[in-house]
Length: 308
Image 1 (cartoon, rainbow, N blue to C red):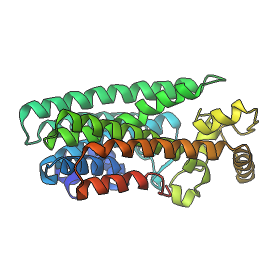
Image 2: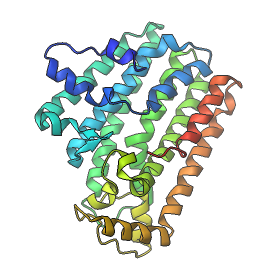
Image 3: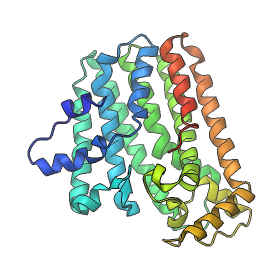
Image 4: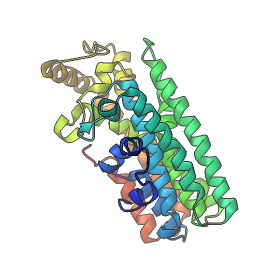
């Protein structure tokens, strides 16, 4: 993957545009979504080299969303580095994100697989990007509301995070030659594991030191984001003084974390994340037992074992 990205997304003129677009991509990342795509293809009998451009396109879409998310969240750090809008300015960051979005579809369309399957994947990724925008809109709108239900949160998370994992798995399956049953099962695997991933991500945002997290700890709570943790705590009448405050001292953050632990809100979110991942893993029962399937199951477990 790390070699394929610069090959398929080279820095051309205007150089600064593509340097800005490649900023987070070159910084690394876990590459979970493209890995999911490649393993899904192999799990249905496909070959990694045939779907590599599709995997790159998925990672590019993911990074496009990160650039725009950081602008909206006014985040200064991502992966331990200055965010794109901090380094190049907001206008340039918007354009860099837009360029990545366009390039992702160009690269996906170039995959050397049966045309009807490629068209199906382009259509699927297009719909997925619409869902991501809807999820992001919901996330922003929640910040203006005093109350958000758990069901509303889960719908938002599915759209904002779950569907890109789902699309990764299903695109890999389609390009790998899967049957409809296999492709649908892999979609559900990605969707459910992706929801679990995001719920756990909300937990990590609170408990992981900044030096490991690569960004400010507790940013979600400080910004007033309606995470599952916050929803559970607020429903129990827990008063989080820093919720939506915009800034907090280390002591204030530590005190808030203690409250969320004592209220059971952290454990509640963690158990929800585990249940989604386990349900997602169960969807792979339709696949033959292969090394790729075993790795997919291991990847799902990693979602809840990672430290950032």
